[in-house]
Length: 131
Picture 1 (cartoon, one colour):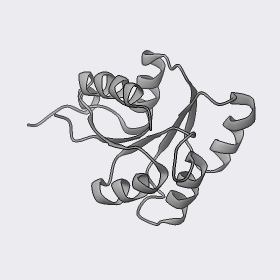
Picture 2 (cartoon, rainbow, N blue to C red):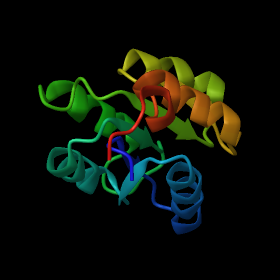
Picture 3 (cartoon, rainbow, N blue to C red):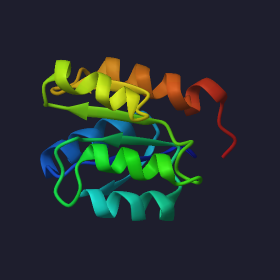
């Protein structure tokens, strides 16, 4: 396992599984939140290196999660990648202004998503592993 932890905030179980398979295969630890409320509590509890955030969530949408992370000193430094099926033209600029480091349209391209993850937090392969 890697020491890089990624919180995946997604309400669709199949999509969560897709992220988990991709990220674990690339040596990232993953954990999940299914809605906006649990996203903040899971982020506080696990202190992730990165958050992958869907916009369309129950109990507080992705923009609410971005705003709450930005207001919390401990969470405000965690990079966030918004991955959404919502209209890119209406939401990309808003997400970036709200603090997201990247916006990826669903369905995502695995190589592109991994490239963004590696750019934001690196990977075990890039920095070496001392298990």
